[in-house]
Every structure is written in C-alpha cells, then in structure tokens.
Image (tube, rainbow, N blue to C red):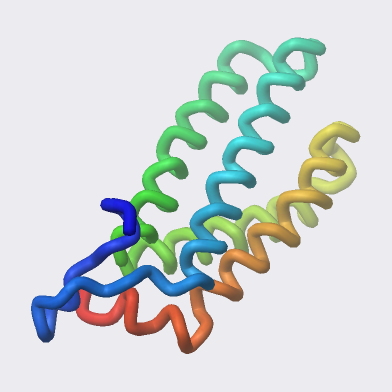
Length: 134
C-alpha cells in the first residue's frame, strides 16, 4: 500500500484500502490534466493563444491538480467539484463549438469521455465508503 492509497476510517480508526474504481478515476484525472496541459502548450507554440491565455490555462490546471490528490485522500468535496468542472466544460465546449480551434475539438473528443468515465467511477457504490464522513 502506498501512502496515498490508505485513509483511516473515521468511525473505526482503521486503515482503509482505496477502491479500484477510485484509483482508476484518479489515474484518469491525472491523464486528462496532462493531455489538456499539453494541448495548451501546443496551442501556445503554434501561436493560437496569447501569453495571457496560456498563463491562465496553466493557472487553472495548477488548481485542478489539487483535485486528484484530494480525491485520492478521500475528499468528498473534491469529487463534487470535479463533477461540476466536467459538466461545465461540456457545456462550455458545446456553447463555443463554432469558435473552437480544431486542436481543442480533438482534445475534447478524447478528454470528455475519459472525464465522464472518471466521474462515473467516483460515484459508484464501491467508492462511497472512501468518501463517507470526510
């Protein structure tokens, strides 16, 4: 067991193993952050975004990097924040579809299903004990 995969059950004070679904979700969260950050870098390199837009994107990804860490440590609030971010990103993508660069489309087509599966895994019944009482 790694340090990140053990959380103490607050009711009994005993260590609890991270469920496989939560572990998959955390891995997918890190993967989608990495893909999105690479996309932002690619857009900056080819000149599709300004320095300010790139900086704001990196600031956002730095904030989002806290979520997989917090989810891995059993934060119930973090999984709901992640759910809201995923839902908002889908709506923003659909609302701004006409103005999106092609690279954003391809990245969105890759990342949104991964994010949706991560959210699905975070809200499975097997994941509930990991987040209860936190």
